[in-house]
Image (cartoon, rainbow, N blue to C red):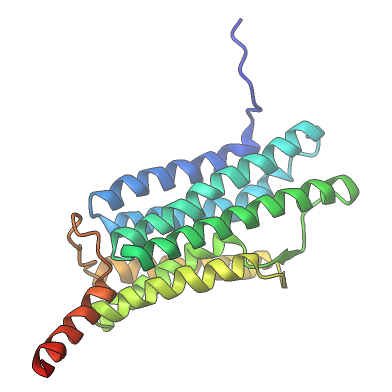
Length: 239
């Protein structure tokens, strides 16, 4: 008889679906299909929003099953809400020394937050059990709403402003991941409203945004390149 490591029941299905959606979204982003990539990011966010609620419906979970679920969720979140959004931003122009520094910063903050969450959640489960009512710091899943909302306004702002905005998103959101503040978890009603907002956002993205595809061979940062283009003529006139 073949035996597999791990735990296989309905409590982890949404977590696996979230991961699959993110990996598929990465393949689409690499090929320039950013609309599908953003859609996949939103799907990952929806799956993550409900996986914990579904897991808690199974009352006879062992301690090992609970710990496995916590670890699995965080590991998948590293891919879905750490690497995946950073890859999208990189492909859209967050490049060069400045861009890579922000990509590294964002991913590192996401990993730190998720690791810290694992430590706290494992301890809390032993002492209290049930679901946690507050977040400490901004949850990594929030990028599944923040990034689509950022892309939503792409069709009304210049390309350079959009790229600057992507830089700022990685910087600010990454910092909020590790900033120690308490944030109340949304109720089911609030969560459904957020999901509805996400659906509307995705609809607007598909209807209006063009997602201008940059040159994939160009490793320079468009912001720094633009600044260089502005200063060089000035230097030529002076000399």
